[in-house]
Image (cartoon, rainbow, N blue to C red; front, side, top):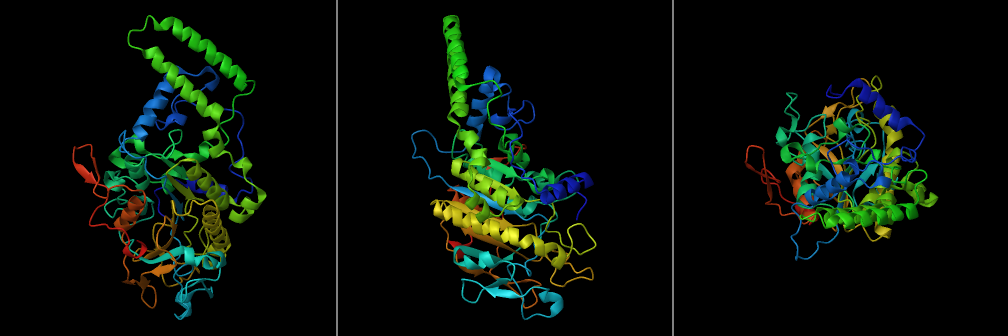
Length: 475
């Protein structure tokens, strides 16, 4: 693994993956605290919600306006509710041992797994992905993804931009934003009470690329910090809040005659809207995992990957536009049995059933809820793994090519797109570049591919670079 993340973060990520206790349990009756972030209203001044802080509420509405920047203007038709869920397999998943097996290659390339047939005629997968094989007609396996400019960070692939790179000179990414931040600026949220871009990752710096020079307003919200934090404080009941609201409004009306600028009248509106958010429970319900049934938890898998997948579904269902899910930092970095995450047999094998079930559960659940066509699902990491098994029974980094999976979004699925050569060393046909991935995501969300943002130097910067176009086989 690279040295861009401290060892303490590695330990924390490993602990999050291995713990048997759910990371989504309620964490007490406290509300979101003040001063922890500049992003979105949940992190801008809502301490002591029972007191309905005026400055916090002003910031709330200001943040909501910023998040809506770039969306349709008033009077235009409201866009269809669409969303994206990105499963980030941090560390670089092995394409040969998952989605692009080479059953006829020599043993040192073929690896320890056998293959199974899928619902797509002629397309085989790893024996450890039986659930994905059973719904392969709803999936697309991209086997020729160019990752030559990527590195051991989320930068390039999460940005969908070959110009956004790890440079290790304090200028990583060259200011280019992630796809999620582009979505936050040019699409915004599907619900005014929710942020457009949420990350569900325990190792933030290692697994989530943010907004670059586009600005702090478009950074992702740290979703794992919000779960379980939307209950009212102990001793505060809704009827008491309603009484306090009535008293405050009465006092505001008394002062309004002295206010020539109508400031207090606006504050009254902010209070009412904020009260509705908590009393109405929309945000609370989105992050509340306790309402999920045992059957749903079993469908997704009772592990950290499955539970985050359920939360991702809840968030897009409630109105978040772009959700990024990561199980743990580097947990697909399978160099060999001498390193933390192990080699292929000992390290990858135990992970695959969880990943297999999480994707299967999400696709199945979204389809049953009528949300699959409006939700684009991506599962990928930063690059592939070397075709040849090394002496430590693992595979090293490989930036020539990687594989990934897509589902939903109303696209044409049930196919393997592109191919690699006989031994999996390089792309043979069906090239997909990072910028093609970005163009596909933005097209799904009805974002104009010719859009641009203005850099701090005042230069127009395109959201799709170097001729990126939607993947033609999918549209």
